[in-house]
Length: 195
Image (tube, rainbow, N blue to C red):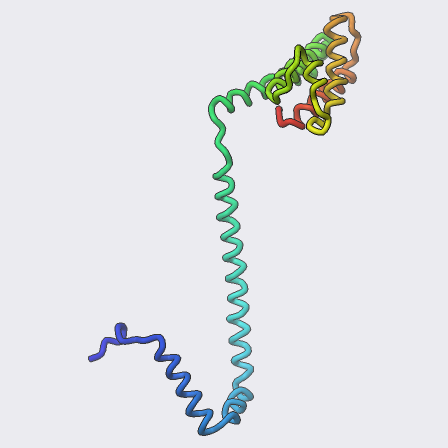
C-alpha cells in the first residue's frame, strides 16, 4: 500500500494540467476552451474577484499590523532617562511650579519674586546651553539670534528683572504686566524645552 502523505509530489498537479491542456488542445482544439469559457466564465470571474478582494483585504491587514508593530518598537526605543535627568527635570518643573504659584498670588511682592525666580531659571538654562558670561546680560549678548529666536523676549524680561532688583519694593508693577513678563520667560523656556 502506498502512503499518500509521503508520496505526494506538488509537481504532479502541474504535470496533470499540462497533459490535460496538451491532449484537449490537440484533439478538440481551441473551440473546446472557448466553449468552456463561455459556459463557465462568469463563475471563474466571480471566483477570481472573490480571491482578489480577499487578498487585497489581507494585504491591507498585514500592512496595518506591520505599522502597529513598528510604532510599538519606536515607542520602546525612546531613550530612557537616567535618575539624574529625572531629578533635574523634576527640579525644573518644581521651580516653574513655584513661579506660577507666585504669579497667581494677590500680592505684588510675590509677582516681583516670580520674575526674579524666572530670571534665575533663565540663568540656569543659559549655563546649560553653554553660554558663558559674568551674568545673564553677558550671556544674552553672546547668543546668536538664529539659535535663539526668543532672544528679544529674554532681553525684555531680563530688563524688567533688573528694574525690580535695583528698585526693590518701590518698583511698581501691575498684575497684568507681571503675568506678561512671566509669559515672556515661559516662551523662552518652551523654545528650549526647559519647562
